[in-house]
Length: 374
Ligand SMILES: *Cc1c(COP(=O)(O)O)cnc(C)c1O
Image (cartoon, rainbow, N blue to C red; front, side):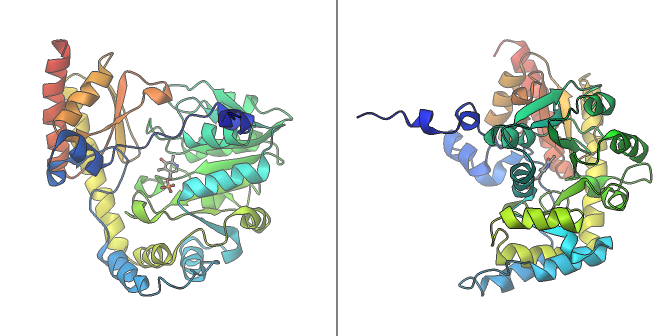
């Protein structure tokens, strides 16, 4: 008997489209016969500096313990994070990347009867984890490419269990001030969990931007998610974390996999927190790269969304897909964002100065060839 296995999947999963990651360098090299060393990947908001030496040394050493299970409680990393942020260790939940934590949060707090609120153009993982559990995603129209926080607060109903806010947001790079976030939190009922996703917070400088951790005492329904994948340069190792009230952390801890962060990742993340110079450098390179890219776009008269992350969404028009392909042919990988409902934009991550230059030169060529209908 032929079984339709699609129909066996739970409803939300049947209609789910998988997350589309940036194209890996080796894949493009295979497809086009290019030398991987000559490919520039500006597609996944990775840190272009390469790993911190301290993280690398700790990871190498940790490999020697690969036949032992990791520390399921991540003691050393939690201790280092607790000290850095002035919180208790029992407020921290570690994740296999913060994606893992976002999913665990959804599974803990939402069900088929729930609504989950997020913004149009917000990080793709929010609708995915919502739909996977069969909850109803409520996508609130954006304002100037950013979250319309007032409209999001108004979208909360008695069925709402969770609200996701990305600050800064990916892929638009928009940000809200501390005052705006606090005004928003003031409007959200205490029995609705607010996830403040601060994957790019390390790039924010200035008192006007919120530090989610500092808000936890006032808003016990808040969960702050952060990651080692972006500014800290450990994307491959998959380490993220949330900081919340101990009561919420206790719930998340029941559902997460017992060994969700491996020994190498734990060691590298703990060590990189000691490498403040790496973070300072990452910020400097990013600020300069954002300027370089913005100036390049201005020279080409391309509109872009001013960004507070380590990437920029640039508007290239109807030929965005053709331009993406033309960039690939030139060994430059960026990120199409049509899946986010932004078919005229491409998202480019900030690279090193020469990588940004390669991208800008390739973009100028691609625009010309796309303009000629190529
Ligand atoms: C990159 C990103 C994450 C997390 O990625 P992980 O590698 O899973 O930690 C989370 N939220 C946003 C908005 C991101 O852009």
